[in-house]
Image 1: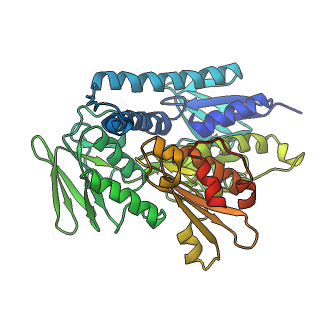
Image 2 (image 1 turned 90 degrees about the vertical axis):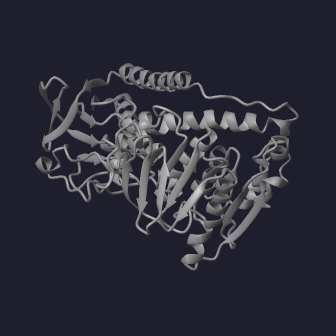
Length: 455
């Protein structure tokens, strides 16, 4: 059987996973990336934001040190040191990805890739030189970039996109965050932890409109305690520079004056220069529709990550990459092939307290008339939470009242992003509340509260 020539355009989590997995399985792999191996959205957005949140978390913890029996500590931000820390983390991760790819004999090409026919990819380098590569199979995984509305003109100084904020030129005295989804609330948490006054423009009646209302309420209360100004039911229509500050105007007439403004209103796919028409690949609003095998309408051309229009999570992109490598090499023909169940993907929001969920939510279940059993246990019932001096939040477990199968769950509290993995394991493998309740967890740990919820 001839070696499969596999060309990957885009070296983010999906592209790296697909390239390394396919190479291990015997394919001849070429990876084309114009910015950073590991993915711009991943290494220029996700990772630095979580690193800054970790720094803010350290500040918040030290500010609460009196509750741990210590004298109060008042740390100060060293912006230069923080910048070096972020750069070091990103370089380490990019180097690790490059080493992994090289170890699997993946050819890495720096430049922009585009389809010029169904089986040809043209790579254009920074100096304008081009090379055409023949491909049996192609993966498009070029990710996304921050969405910038026509009424905003980011300048990287006072009017910021998410990629201008890691860290920003200076820690804002007063930051207006536009957008109250996952990215927006993480920025509110981040900058309040770093000492900024923050105003949040909320287009709906509560933050995180796609999440459990109880979860959103818990986060809003935390924001209010921190002094965050919430402007609910307002949509931004203009941002203007005003000397040493900015003015944000809302559609209801409200105006917010602050030192900086940050746009966190979603992202758009990087698909406009991929040559989709030349290969006959269909798209919708810039996204490439895919089937359960991540194939586009052209069977040998796959799409993954943000470009596929599925959940914009690195974990999902990585899994898509692995599944694509196996599918395009025919491994699904020799053994059972488990397709990705996007509804069972766990997600987290790195605020304080953290938020995480997976599977069926209580609100969705009742909205669709589905009978479920809901068990809610507060972290204040956990010995470990009290030891940590952080009893905020709760665990909510959703199960089938007839079979006991765990259908989903939500967690608000310390280390929620880690704890949700246990519920995700139950949801993915159709384990029951009995299975969870019979599991012996370490004591004292926060995970024990999952057993209490299962009981």
